[in-house]
Image 1 (cartoon, helix red, strand yellow):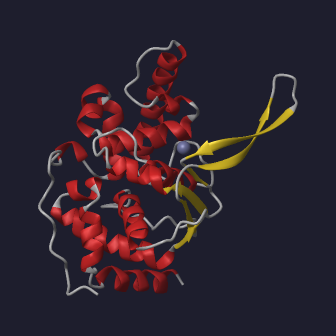
Image 2: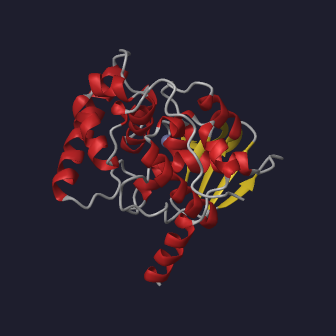
Length: 268
Ligand SMILES: [Zn+2]
């Protein structure tokens, strides 16, 4: 079965990439910054992603190619260069027009469960679904070098969940990198939490102090969105992320990016 699935994916990756989709990817700053060969590899991943994942509009949002390709393009940046599978546990992406309200259960100091609601811009579940606010996805596009990228954040959680546990450590086959990852992530997370506890400025989004899985997700956003700043301020953390993602975004053009790519095929 695995062989058949891989053959099918190889055929999907080789399909001509529609010109309309290339134009959408070119409107996404993160995708436009990619080196040309990476952009071509990305198109193959996007073909597989869009063939295998189901998009569902919620709250009245109509799903069109702009929604699908904008989200798939950024998610698949996380797959480049690696022998990675296309988010194997993920089945469906639910997209709301804007922030949505979700039920929240909290336990207070006396052990009572308090039921409340909170607004969210995205969330990622280990059992097959991921939720995004389209307004928030668009806001990130308008701030190309800002530290936030909700798509990278939620899909980093999907990589994390591939081990069966969201704990800030995605599957890493190479023992040396696995050991370095654990050491660097633990140390950077502890430093980050210490600064947040003292109310001091932090390099990464303070939200990363919530738990190790959130720290990994915000570190992934910053690694791709503000690579030179992270390399300068947190070089050891940058290094394990560079080795894991097998990408070095600090070397990418950070200004206009490359000119729009030509399509690989006639398009459809
Ligand atoms: Zn998160």
